[in-house]
Image (tube, rainbow, N blue to C red):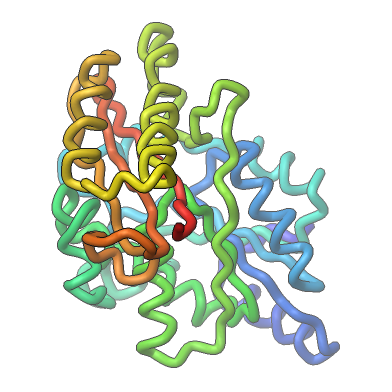
Length: 284
């Protein structure tokens, strides 16, 4: 497995693969890898001859009071996992390599109608950081395929719109959420939870499933379902609920009538840890 930290060496490697007619997949990560990330690698391997995993904790997508400094950095262990998965190359640039002219000099501003709601309302500027780093990674790697996890549902919707708007020749794949045995969506931030919080955390998935079952039973009072779910989470011991919303899967607009493809998205807090989850609902 190649370990690369310079754009020049990355491009040289990818060009060799492409000259040989090989299809290249990219799995962007911030490191601290777990089974959820490794499932993305498996999906990428199904879609391409070569797999590149990027490991970069992107400062642009962290707000001033968020956890950039304490975000877990486990590069050696990450590489060990990726070797087991027979990843072809790891790209782990420095901040200076990624942003040679400074972090604020190059920004790809995400579409406002997708980024001022849900996560964007709570974390202003977050998606500008996401679209900037992913755009740069796409330019650096020039992948045929890029794989992202469903847990960050809004992020995938924003990136799909970016790819469409900028006519990028990249196929975006949204891979299913990987969960622990108790249903908690895998996340690097789960390790912040103490023992008591870890017992409460799986209730987020339980409550979202109850909303899905209500919709599938043709309950279309969506605003009431959202309000009830919020109260259930607080009753289960969550310290705060940023949102529980039923949204259209592509536009992320609110769902007002039955029969549409929709997703139930939620963000809730246990102490300083913020948990995301979502559940897809088929139309009835």
